[in-house]
Image (cartoon, rainbow, N blue to C red; front, side, top):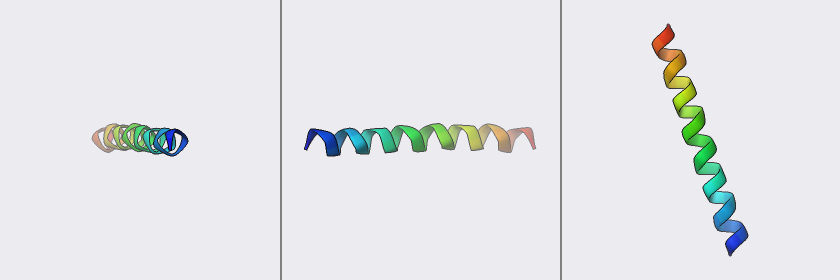
Length: 29
């Protein structure tokens, strides 16, 4: 269970980071 929850947290964190990067790139355009 701990491993599954950890994987989900990593996926969510990665998604947030990617979202922030895309948002910043969008502003540059």
